Length: 357
Length: 281
Image 1 (cartoon, each protein chain N blue to C red):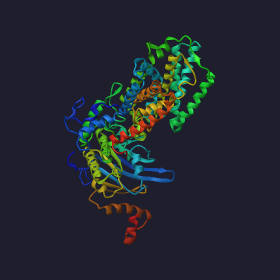
Image 2 (cartoon, helix red, strand yellow):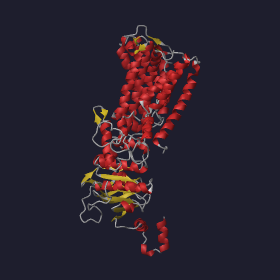
Image 3 (cartoon, each protein chain N blue to C red):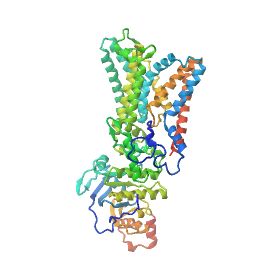
Image 4 (cartoon, helix red, strand yellow):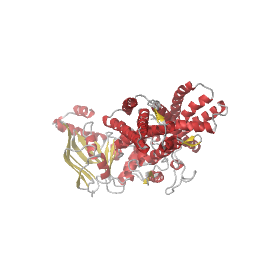
């Protein structure tokens, strides 16, 4: 669930607006839990906890193994830059997963939208118009995914598997497989992915900004509440008057826009774009979301968790190299981490929610 | 919540009955050639608990779906406060003041009690959810319905027992000042103790002046909660009587009489053996 404020967990007398002081008014009655273990459960219920622990352990481990290169400022600037594009994609994917759906087309959307943008800039269109086209493609791809899924009533896994191939094919057709490079990058591209100060690049701030906006949207707005409801139990959401179809389509559109925007940021970083960029992002974004606490079945998850999840994947990639381990281990380790993380979430869930019903 | 029984003269035995809040007149529904409901008249008064009983296929759930806006009747009229009402959707019915607690309760397990309480009717402050106020209001309502000291509003609904979920659903209808509460088999999945708790909540809704329609097939339990029994048989109403302490057997006989009249059999012509066999069915 949302990173709920402490106010949520205390029973207090009516009328107060602030979190009730512990020990104020009635204690939690019924003897179902001791106060101490209640505090522990509350902590464990934060979905970010497990992944934050993993991140800390990896940080300590790699810092020790890399003899001081891993925990340097320069290295973290590099990790931040490398995290940003996948991070922006993951923010959208995790929101969509909370609503109970998947998007396997984010990688293709990422490359297609950014390539159109690159070609437009290359051909002399105003850069802002090119960015608008990129975002427009994101909206269109997301809308198509959403409408096809809702109207044909098929699993989004299948819809987006189809559109993944569709847009990958279109991208190859348009570019003939060539890399498009922009020789004199305009200001828009610098603002998206250029250097802000030394090794710190703009894309980190776009990632943090996207996380903040989407995090607020998901955890603090009515639309977000509906996304959780639709993903948690669609039928119940419909019964209580939630506009289920609209909410589901909105989730696909948000995911599509963020994937396309991440492509634009990538273009800003590299000043070039190829059809093969981002081709593994769909799986990495799902892995990062799951590691960060998103339930595959929908209804549970957090943007902050997914963001830490992305950092963990990037720490692995970077830390293995700096520790002198072959980088070819990266994917295998990610696989193990994904399984371990889900096993951990299931255990913590049982512990804090009682037996699964 | 204080003593279960109401001090108002709302039971069927009362001399002065309030006028019905919701009424179905000669309501019918067919599905192709199958008649699910045939010219049914039922009235629901504020502060009265009507138990709808009958076998599977008797038209109970068709009636519930018509009253909650899911199906449209193809004959007859629905009246709310004496005026003709068209309930084109579940949303229409809810806006008119009819809250239906379905068997799956309309609660999202993975969300907190407070978020569930306000689902579809969220409180806002600017563009954001007013979570503080939602939690405060939910807490207040939980205290009012007697669950305030038992549960924290930030807990996931998945932690609640079946009885507590029913209580939350019923509490939601009361809190949002609905006028009629429809419960579809509210106790079918509950233990005896939990059933009694849920009955307390249904009585609370009654005391608050809601018209209550309770669909049940447990003829033992229904005697504890109903003010009036409405009995359906094959889409027709075959009995509509006040609860005067009828036994379970007498209730079964209402159902049986519907069956006999349909078969065109005089009850007196049957020997006890056949009667018992029919009642066993």
